[in-house]
Length: 290
Image (cartoon, rainbow, N blue to C red):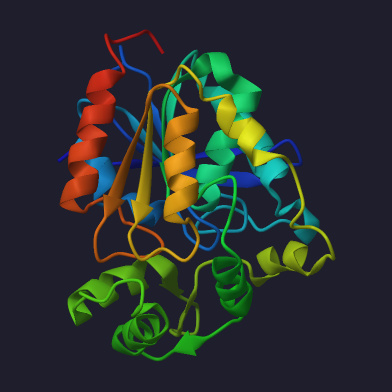
């Protein structure tokens, strides 16, 4: 399988940001993979190698995550700043067309990118998020984001991840939990296992009314005419079946697939998701110069 290269770009406010670049055909638009709130480029370790070769894949670490720099101002940990960071990368890469794959927060950013760069979007995948987010999911996220834990071994970390995510992935084995732990955590300089993000990403959540924001149905509507895949976990507490169905009905070129026995968020390595992604990429059409 093609190996990736670690590459970097600069944000408008001077942060050095990281991405994994998987090589692929230059006559096709690159796939930009955008992770969730507390996640990083490692979330696409299954997806990216599978698609690489035929497609260039760029898996991002958003500011404050993974190998990207932490922001001095925690109030820059908001969607519009992330969009500006991605726009800076697109400008540096000089791409005229791209495909966005976004999980959770990454799906919100995909919708916002449709507003900022609609003419450049060749396709989109929105993974387990929508214009309306279920209150139960918001409460769960508020309950864990920004709370630091450390563990002496990977097995301790895996068991902690299993305890907090068992409802979302009821069929997972300890091997699956170890994989998830190694995507969520890193080893610090003291040899402890710690979460791989800046705890200050939680601060914007504490601002009263900060969850109001933009009309995301209007943002979603900008994907009209763009081949789009909507993925929902059947057990998701963030994206309801009703919202996902409405999303698919809103867009003329959307397909909705539901991943069984899975909550928030599907890994995109499940068989039903793999098949749907292949259909999406086949629908995008003839190769275009990027």
